[in-house]
Image (tube, rainbow, N blue to C red; front, side, top):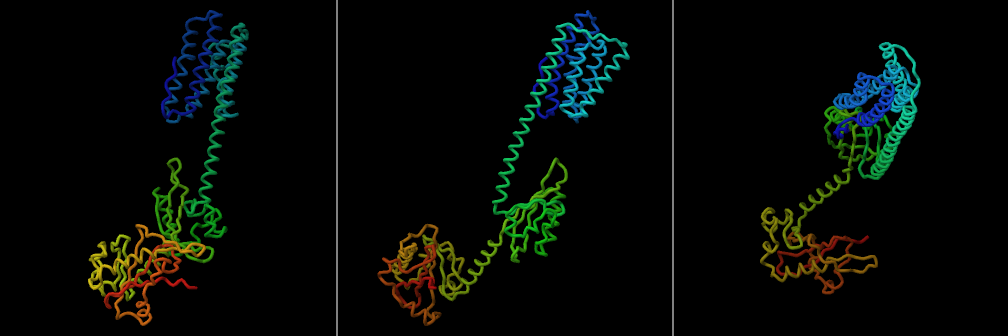
Amino acid sequence: MLAPAKPKGIHRLVRMNYAIRAGAFIYCFLALGVHGWERSLGAAFWGLLALTFLVYPHLVYLLGRSSSQPKKTEVLSMYVDAALLGAWTGGLHFPLWIAYAAFFSTSLNAASLGGVPGGLWSIASFCLGAALSVAALGLAYAPQTSAIVTALCILGSLGYSCAIGFVMYRQNRRIVAARDALRESEERYRLIAENAAELIALVDRDARWLYASPSYERILERADLEPGVDAFRRAHPDDAESARAAVLRAAATGEPRELTLRLVDRDGRVREFRTRIRPVNGDGAAPKKLLLVSRDTTDVGESEERLLLAAYALEGMTEAIVITSADGTVATVNKSFSEITGYARDAVLGRSEKEIRNALQPPEFYDELYLVVQWCSTRWEPAGRVTRAPLRPETQGFISLSDGSRLSPQQKRHQGSELPPSSKETGCSRRTSRTPTTFIRSSIASGPARPTLQFPNTSG
């Protein structure tokens, strides 16, 4: 009879034992059939023999396949196997080689899967089956077997031992391969965790450390990271309780959560982190571990503050500032621009600067102004040599316009200085910034004038 196709979801032990049981029982049918044929046993013998060794293995497989506890069902089936073979041994009056082969194979199979307890249960089941057979048919002892039956029993025992050994060998190889793969995976993820910029940790439901990646040691002392220590003992007092509550909610709901967490580092500096809490679920049970992944956003927040301060400074300047892209599209203007020119901010954003040029200045004035911007976008190399760097498409130009009435005496003296003709050849002035940005200052109140340059002070 052909074995059924391997369905998805059938327990591994059920599949493995089905193949072993089906093959072994067919061989037992052959050996016992020869023994019964030699003794001219009747139809009842052949009927029970076929039912036990040709039909029973497939019934056991179907039972284990449909059971809600397939492993437990299969273990019980092994003990039933031992009891059946014990009953056949007692019914045939304990032929020596048949008894040995049946007792040896059932005990070996049970011991290989259940250890010593499994082997003892198998022996007890075999003896129980033999006792029931003796009680039903009477006690007799006929140890003799023919040479053919003896040879079949010896070869069957040897083959069964080799089959069990081969199965155990394959299982051990799979276990070794799985352990090697697990070790490599652990090493790989440990390497990632140790070198990741993010802080990675595992905590329990009570927000106590289970594991903290080495990146945490850049922020906290080692004593603050010991397993069992409160994970938020160094958190800002305003954030500690809310963080513990987030851990409990994530563990209760099984849903990840995010929060902003401030930690006081080993130097006493308050650092801000964006933390994601994700439960680590296991076998459908309530999560006992939670993964914390924190990203340091302190520098981002400080950069935003600096940008905000720069924006406030830009708005507070008395000079009109226009920031344009390389193609002349207006990106932003400050308050003084609107006061000096009369253009509202929203009215000029996104427009070309050519549309808001002052008619008091000739076109050549603005052409020369942009030529100066192009030629003065330079950078210095280590040897002190100036090289011209053409403006990139994404580079923005800063144009500063000032009302003559708002200029200080120093600014007026600077306003009157002409751009030396040689500036186009020498790069105009030394600059330390890598961004090719030039500040152009011109007057819109004193008539046509040549543009002059103002560079950031790089002295000192």
